[in-house]
Length: 190
Image 1 (cartoon, rainbow, N blue to C red):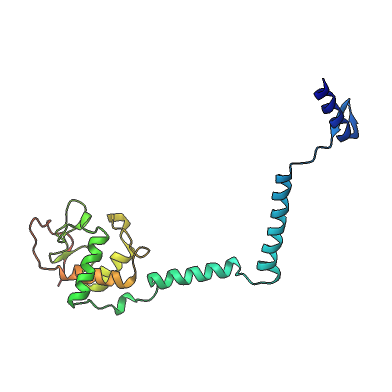
Image 2: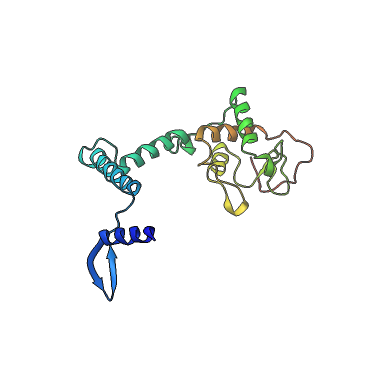
């Protein structure tokens, strides 16, 4: 019985003057941990606002975006190589690097392990090519892809230098005549 009296007395202490249709309002304060979180949030927002807006110490989101875009462009060399000024690499190191890119990017899934072609991709070792057989054409098809034929664009996945290396490697496969080569497709290159 005394517990009920204590509860009633506690309610009477917190009872406010508001009364609406017999419903009385109690003034119960929130728990201390909620109030602590509330004050920490207010303090953090003041520090954040001062750092980024009033003192202008931190970078704005526009500056962060520009910095990240610049870093991305440098990593992938987005506009560094002009397709018209390309030359095919012929040194062993570049061709080995091109072969490694060919393997790493799983080009053999469509073009075969030795460029012989398969049910999906064309033969890269014969004299007949679908999209041109010069280094510029090969570079462009690797970089920009050919969605209608199922060729993936690799410009967002590897750098222009690596595209040039793999294009040079593909050019070096011409005339290698691997076993099980796919029938000729496209136009004969002169």
